[in-house]
Image 1: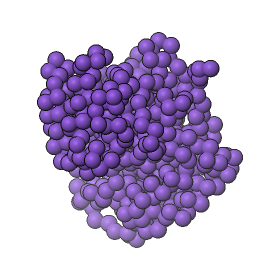
Image 2 (image 1 turned 45 degrees about the horizontal axis):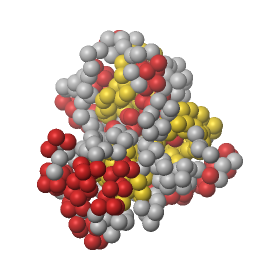
Image 3 (image 1 turned 30 degrees about the horizontal axis):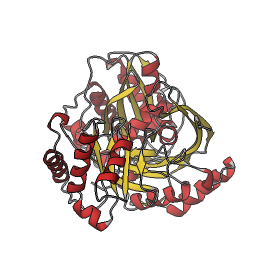
Image 4 (image 1 turned 45 degrees about the vertical axis):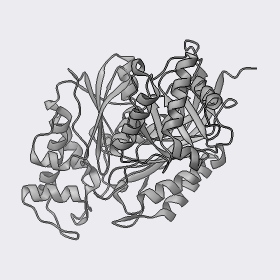
Length: 476
């Protein structure tokens, strides 16, 4: 009997600059009857548990406290009545200033191993912008109302911006504007100063250190500069020297018009009327941003999710599903994690062994990679049609391009945008010496520079769960 529906339990864990929390979601996958391959699509995403929100525990200014964080997450699983063994997918996302901590990568990877079967470890400002837009509801709203929406998730360390048009995210950006970049307690004493706050203070001629008293007027001056820089990026492009210094990524690529703006993240709770004092500049920053929204060309709307946007995005929107006609060598073991995606631009009209091999070589050179030294995923849009002679030609080219990988038994991963993976895989095995360590997937939309995790196949090996992610852990 054919399976037409799959249910998956997913977790999203956000380790942010200010706060950490998790959500559990049920994902329902159903076959798309309109698709030629009847591929599975995610049809429903239901959040079933929203956990407590804690202040991200730190050992010192440079390191996250892994023990406290692990204990908290274990307690959350217990409160939700969920066994990590039952979690099938999800993502641990390390965001904002926390991604710069010395042990951020190790903690993300450790948490992902304990979180369930196929939970990705990820960090990166553009990826965070993407999942925050989805988790806030802005991307769905842009589809439902045929609008172009700019969403901005303002957290503790960064503001992650995305433009969603008709259900697709067309541009992302990030700037260092957040509540906890300057920590000030109720008595006006500074307990935390992050580098972006130093830049703002230098810009306006202030010089404070940890433990100093700071007048409210100076806090407001700092918050005003942060707010002005954020609005400058949102209305774009950033042109002032301060805004350029605070930018984490490139500017947004703006469409003709923005129909609506929305804010999410912890600071957004304050923008939309919630009160709170968390020994940071969040409330003052929220007030300053709100006072500048008159500069926006379209109305500001309130999204479905605010402080939980990123964590819901991580749990409900980080998963992609391959087409239903993949090809896999049964000796491969899963999950296969942290695989870089390399785009290969093959012109179908010029199909030959020499052309395909040269295009693959150019792609390796573009990333300064050497074939046979590590696993990569080659991504082709539409390189070959389902004609046996042409498929055989393409197969011979793959064999010729991967001589070192074949010799060293390194898995070869081919990904196609079009529904061709099974045909390619079968012809490669039949017509070449590449008999094992081959994985061929299709109907996935990827970008060069993505990293992917590939989970164990579902539905008798027909469908592969894939997490597309970013891996940017650094201190610079």
